[in-house]
Length: 367
Image 1 (tube, one colour):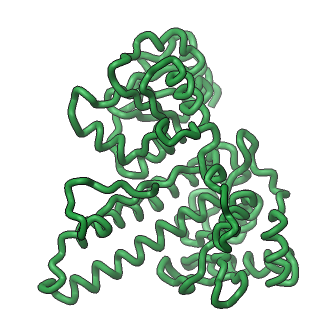
Image 2 (cartoon, one colour; image 1 turned 180 degrees about the vertical axis):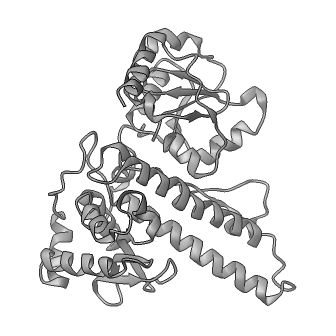
Image 3 (spheres, one colour; image 1 turned 45 degrees about the horizontal axis):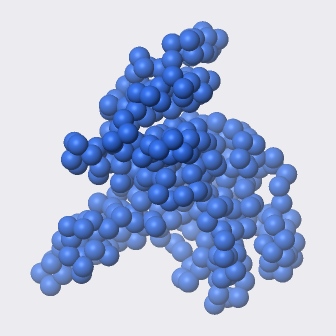
């Protein structure tokens, strides 16, 4: 499910004020071709996360409005901002889902669309090459401005279409986005400065056509088993073994007796990538599980997180649950926690296995 429904609100309000959950990154930001981790994480946490937080705040405000008495400027303003924020959220999710490699492998840069989508592109554009030329030319034409280029499936038009959008709210009615390319400056300026064309070429070399193809199958009603395509690599498959950032936040603000114990797992080689953690978490190396597992309580839930919620936390949770612990992996890791505006504290490695801390010191000395 994409939403959490607070039980404290009445049924007529619930659809309006429910919290839309953050979607995790499916790409590994440190392994992309020519798109830096700094750029991708900033874009995800600040721009996508900002739109999501704004949308949830607007929806909460709309749930309290007295529609018969509210002034027209308030109604117009809130509904306009809701449209802009919601469109930004959905397009950003489509954008990030469309990027990345497979598992631990970075994008190859030579992957082609899967059969069904390839045939549709050839049918509607003449060839994949012709589609690509139109799509990238449209994106480069937006350089220096802002907007999106969207590959969408339209039932009414009976075809795939490359859609131009000058802002988040310019969407073709009834069409389903298959691929979205963000041409706002925030999507590329950290890496490319004003060289928007170079950014477009680099994005095209980082596309994950397997997930784009899954979106296409869902759009035309042929997707029957696509959920696995949108699950972070290595995350537990069972829903009960995962916890969303929003649910964790609510639980941490709740009853102290049932507050989850927080376990921060990080590979030694990834320590230089870390600067903060959730308050109260203990940090450990996943490979040293035999040295810290007995410290965990069996009468409290345990929330396990890593950087992005891939196999580091996923593998640990599977093992902890096998041993009888009530453990769940934080979907999207601390990166998703940042995106919802979750509070953190400076990184504390005092509980990390001492022999492995040398990796961090050596890595910093080498810079």
